[in-house]
Structure formats: C-alpha cells, structure tokens
Image (tube, rainbow, N blue to C red; front, side, top):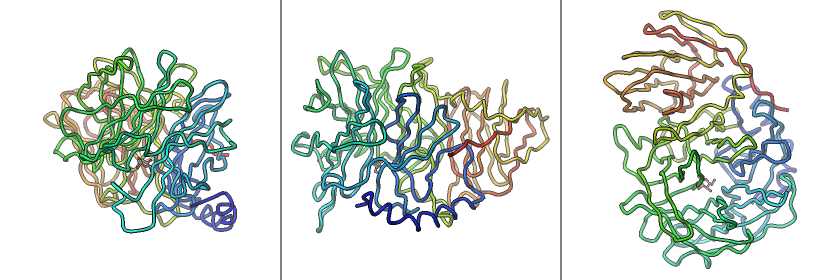
Length: 463
Ligand code: FRU
C-alpha cells in the first residue's frame, strides 16, 4: 500500500534519492525514466487537451520494485516533459497491493482509465489459482485528479475456467460498442485474451476469447488491439514460451498476432506471432492513436525476471523506449522512431569507414548497405551480419547480457540511437528492432565496412 500520505511523508527520502539519481553518469538523455525508484510498463497513454500523457508502473521509493502506483509525465511534443505528481496511489481495498497496468480511453471530453487492482491475501497461497484478486477498476479523470475508483469487474465476472491472473485492460471501440481486452491465464495453464463488451464503458459482460489452437505460453500479459493500414493487430506479451536460437530469446516475449476478428459474430483468424523487438530490454508495449492518426507505441525498456541486471546504486531503474510509429507494410508491422526526435539533431557528421566516433548520445545512420558487416557500437559491444544472421554481442559491461540473434535475409539500412546506457537499433527502416541497456564507459562507434552519418543529439528537457 502506497497512498498519497505515505508518498508525501517520504519527501526527504525522495529528495535524497533524486540527488543521487542526478549524479549517475549513465542517466539517460533520450528517454523517460523515473524521477526516483523503479519504473515498468507504460500505462494510460493518450493525447488529451494539447498534451501527451504518459503514465507508468512506478515504485518511487525503491529502485528494486516495491509498492506499485502510477507515475505520470506530460509532454506537448515528446521532447519537453513535465514530471507530474503520481496519478493512481494504492489507497483502496480494491488495489491495496498494486495499481497494475491499464490504459486510457477518451470519451465525452474525459479520460476513462481502466487498470488492474492487485490484491494479495495473507496466507499460504500460490497466488495463481488462489490468494489474489485482480479487480478491473475505472477512473474518470482530466488526467490529474479523480473522485472515485469504480469497480467494473472482479473474479465473479470472469469466466469460471480462469486462474486469478486476469489483468491489463485495454479498450477498443467498434460500431458503437466498447470491447475490453484483458490478458488471462486459464486453469489449463493456457495464456489467452478475454474480450468483454459494454455499451456504456461501465457495465461489461464477457463476450469471447482469443487463443491459439496450439500451446503458446501460460499467460498473455498487456494485450492491445487496434487496426493499422487495414490490418487488425493484437499485441500481447506471452509468458512461458520455449527459447530458441533465433526466437523467443528473452524469458518473456513481446509481439503481435495479425488478427482478423469479427466481434459481432465472435469469429476470428489469428496469424503467426511476430516478435516486436529482438534485444534484451523490451516488454509490455502499449499503443495509442494521436491527433495526426499516428499509431504510437511505447515500450518498457526492461525485462521482468531476467537473469541480467542493471546497476542501481543511483536509486533508479528502467526507462520507457523512444516512442515508435507503427505502420503495416508488406504483411509486417514496421516500427520507426517518432520523427520529432529529428529535432534533437545537433548537426550532421559524415564519417568514412575505418574511422571512429566517440560521442555518447547520438543517432547513427547507415544507408545502402550490401553484404556482411561488423560494427563496434561500444568498446565491448559489436553488431555483426554474416550468412543472413545479425548478432548483437555484448561484453561484461552489459551486466549479464550476452548474445541476441536475428535471422534476416538482407540488411540495407541501420538507424541506431545511442544513449548513455541504452541502444535502440532499427533495421531496414523499422522492419526489425533491437533494444538493450548497456553500461560500458568507452563509447566508440566504428566500422571498416561502410561510411556512416552521425547526428549528435540534444537531451530531452524535463521540467
Ligand atoms: C507486465 C506486468 C503486467 C502487470 C504489471 C505489474 O510487466 O506484469 O501484467 O499489470 O506488470 O507491474
């Protein structure tokens, strides 16, 4: 439980933590990170009355993850941010052990937030089939304040074959009805998405489920359904998939199924699951549509339960990814860094192969590539392409991160965002992406295989 009073009474502790955060040489310039403490999933992403609002899973008093509430930043342009007061505290019996992930839906000039109230019972439970409630809660708000937490659904409203793990609501509107997508784990240990229907955004009834006809993990977290360029896309984060050499290399996955769904007749066709990112640190992405009709995705630049870590001596951990704009082209979702980031470019440096660039925060662009190559991104981080396999190889400065591989039959373009302790690598104009944290202090970018351009980037501004 972390209510507003506990948060405010910890102001001295937070002040000291904030001072430590500000002295971290690995503090990020291009990303939203927690003012103090821990951050995980992006939540409630929306554009409302002239501002983008980003909320996130937030544990302000503990960089190792303690009580989870919703943090909040706002921005007019993804470049200048204002740190807002936390939005959802855990001050109700409905969410006393965590204000878990959820989303925003704007209706009649107000933001309707839906999230999962996590409740754990005292006692000897496995917290999967017993000992836990996942309440679906609604808040009507201007983005900053609200009066009440409305219980929309609890376990009595969920199908009887489900465990206690049902969470992360996201709304999709179609033909005047509202559909809530929830991630679920059935007693059969099958992960799936449950869909509930509402006419008024308050009373929801069970409508249908989307699952694979084959085993595909025991839990699907953070579902998100939308259409882009005429294609239905279901994003989710399956847990419990077996890792292979080229796929599912992380402990949990974040990706999408192309989904053709007829919500009226309750029928659907699910395509094959595609991973959204092949790096070490990408999970729980959420999307929303902005006024320019762009489908914007932001992910958590982290990974739960991984066997690699991050240094946390400066009282903060994790960040959000650079926002990405999604399109659907040639039967695939493409992800491109949001174009606003071009305004951070300071100048352009053209470098010839064999030369090195040793700045810390920059965008590197290579075009018209052909054939195999090797790039040094940091002193002990290399990216090599050989025999149709792209390999990210990380050394000791990566806190346990080692190899990630992608099978890809040609590479013609790379766009790499280097921040003080992260890399986001966009391949072939966003056909594939690799995101990772990295903590080497020798920043060298060099290659013997091609000329490249570097744009040193100015930092985001936090007010
Ligand atoms: C994903 C997740 C969500 C949950 C939240 C809790 O990272 O496990 O399913 O709502 O984190 O912080």
